[in-house]
Amino acid sequence: MTSRSRAAAVVTGALLILSGVVHLGVFLAGDTPWAGPVSWRKPVTFGFSFGLTLITVAWVVGYLVMSPRVRAWLLGVLTADCVLEVAGITVQAWRGLPSHFNTEDPLSRTVAMSLAFGGAVLIVVLTWFAVFALRGRLRAPSDLRLALRAGWALLMLTLLSGIAMIVRGTVLFRTESPDAAYRTAGFLKPVHGVTVHALLVLPLLAVLLRHLGHPEPRRRRAVALATAAYVLAVAASLWPSIR
Image (cartoon, rainbow, N blue to C red; front, side, top):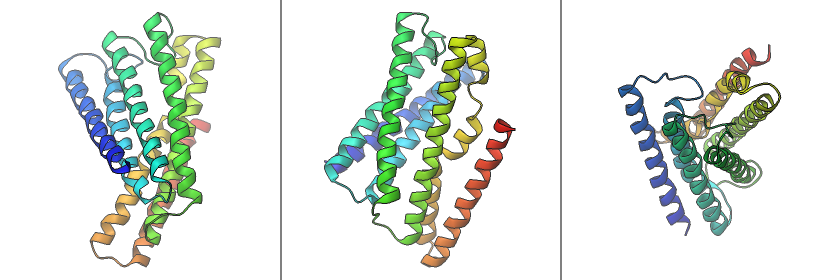
């Protein structure tokens, strides 16, 4: 069951990345601006990011010591949720309407509610996996264990920054104006962008160094240095938002 759920997650992730590629082509062929609440940027970046994250999680959860049935169930929920998130963003892009905070018509309200629900599910599932990684056992050498735990911890920062942006945007949308929400809700995008794929980069570094024949102590030092570099990058990306 676990192998089937992981295979389904990888295939789905590849299709989401393909969706991002297709919409990048649509953007390049048109004259719609890249930035702004209504653009092709969102289906491109969401397709790439959700697809790559889903493939990454399908890979790294294999190192978690947990019930195969629970792992398969959580991975199946995550797979469906990633499709829901990217589909909602994509539908609104083709309609030429904002996807977040937009409740002006019935379909937009449905999309906004589905994105909010999907975001909550995403947080629960990824946090569940992260708890197992940070507090449980991992079938991996010490360098890869460090990479996995650091990657999951940084992914939690991704989720926290996403929550903060959604909360701020929702408050501004209701208390000030849609323009204020769309203009300033993304104040933590740099942090979000820096941390979102650490769960891929750090374990991949450990695996590549192992295949290159480096001994485990050297691999562990390299992963520790890469983790420290990530922490510094997070601090640098956070500074413009809090100063």
